Amino acid sequence: MISKEQVQHIANLANLSLTKEEIEKFQKQLGDVLEYIEILNELNTEKVEPTFQVTGLKNVFRDDEIETCLSLKQALSSAKSKYNGYFKIKPIFD
Amino acid sequence: MKLNQLTISEAVIGLKENKFSSQELTRACLERIEKIDKKVKAFITVSKKTALAQAEEADRAVKGKNVFERKPLLGVPVAVKDNFCTRGIRTTAGAKILEDYIPVYDATVVKKLKEAGAVILGKTNMDAWAHGSSTEASDFFTTRNPWDLNRLPGGSSGGSAAAVIADETVFAIGSETAGSVRQPAAWCGVVGFKPTYGRVSRYGLIAMASSLDCPGPMTKTVRDAALVLRVLAGKDRRDATTSFEKTLSYLDKNQIKIKGMKIGVARQYFFEGINKEVVAAVLEAIKVLEKQGAEIKKVDLLDPKYSVAVYTVLQRSEVSSNLARYDGIRYGNDRTQFGEEAKRRIMLGTYALSAGYYDQYYLKAQKVRTLICRDFERVFKKVDILIAPTSPSPALKIGASAEDPMFGEMQDILVEASTLAGLPGINLLCGFTKDNLPIGMQIIGPQFGEDLLLKVGHLYQQITDWHKKRPVL
Image (cartoon, rainbow over all chains, first blue to last red; front, side, top):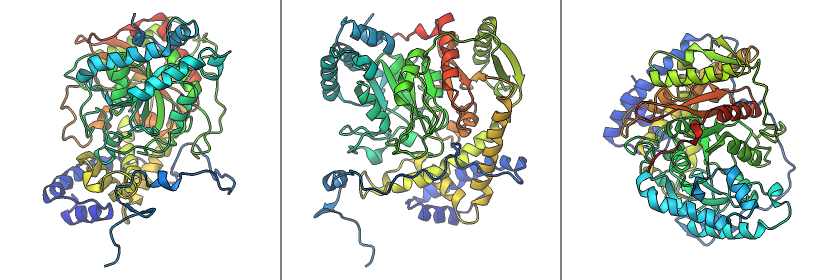
């Protein structure tokens, strides 16, 4: 069973804010799911390569040439907070 | 017959022969939506103005010489799952975080539909971020199953499936990461086609699990699914995971040599616990194909429970990465607006990828994924296709998915393995339960076996008429 501290740590990594109730609920639910996943250990994967994706494709490149992209106006169009052609964000430093 | 009840094939013939206009066809769908969608709730956004404008443009273009060769879907209305970016039309992925997001670009799938002349009716409801197999997990509302409004349509492409069977649209587009096209297709009784991973571009499809997501058509007939696939398939320079494999003119030659075709039936996909009526209907459908000359072979496949575990880890890991971009800065609301299911999945994914746990969970799951791929490769040396039930049960009642952290995975137990291996699969309606609920069977093929699946499915629909049934609304 994962600890409440671990749940809080994961929430911090994932930049999620959880209430006390949510931490407790997720602690149990995550624990249940992790228990189920243990069945993977029934299979021997020694010397088996992982499959990260099934296409087998590698290094799909294009020429390093500038193409049309979104205009500044388009790029900012969905932002709730903008200023002078920039995205406005919370300060990183005090 | 009302115009909105037509299939793509019938609509195109009617438009070519000037029997009706695209505007009349589009209006018939819009009127149907107005009449019944308050009961079915398939649509999040109905784009009435743009649809009629597109229809008007289609009616002008219809007069052009050989225009249907260049624009095979000209004038035909389509409903698009709300995780495909549609320029200028709100796109939410069923999630509150994107409740007012208006994309400035079209997904490649949408671009191709438009280039083929299709008319976009609107965006359909889905489980938020595609996390689910019920459409109950939409942040907005639950879509109802048109066969029984107290039941779920399945998910996450539940809105698309419901819209098709309710004749609110001529066809729809869904997406599948593990069952999200096939399972709602089974619960609603429509054709749901999941192509091989990499066959159709994911550019502009709001990402869930990047190594698994597949756009796919949801249609009234297999022929319609083939027509849509012809438009959607192909390499896209904007999606580096799309395949260089040549596309085909799917279902070009109708006749398939079913005699001697080897159909694999795996007992692991007919396990104790699957609804008995579902099993009976699927076995009956297999017999129908056997009577046509197919050879039924018993095969063994890895227990699907392993794919559930693999999928659970991989999907949530990739989700935790893909949902990291929703910071409320460039678009959408901030991360406090994530629903519970999304938070749960992000949490599990973050854990599985975190330092100290990566090898135990993510890496292990990817290795088992290799075993699953090899398992199918082995079986496809002995048989041409596999047939199994799509879903362990028919449509469940509203509320069934609540508070079960692995509801989706268990509902999708029969489709997860083929998804992990990137294989194509199609759901076909093959019967009804005594409660008049649709029963779906799935046909799974080897990589890039789309044409084979479509041919077998088309043949099945020529010798049975399940696909003609509609709910009474």
